[in-house]
Image (cartoon, rainbow, N blue to C red):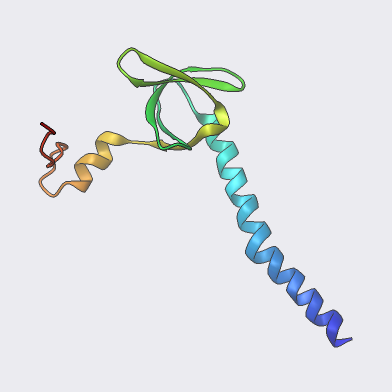
Length: 104
């Protein structure tokens, strides 16, 4: 009897700690993919940032540099970003320029 209670408790703990957060993450990802629109700045699984130029059912076209476009499967999108707002907020003086020196 005690073993069944212990097993039941472990199953509940597994569900709460593993299954629920995973389900929540999947719902957020699905919502993001449904809401992605032309002009949004997004980040891919590989860490590439770019602007959405075309949206199809299963893929998007991402502009990663001027006149450089790549076609990606929609599920490769991990986040929508706001570069201008984040860049100004990260810098103490409000500038968005990088303090790094250029390479020779």
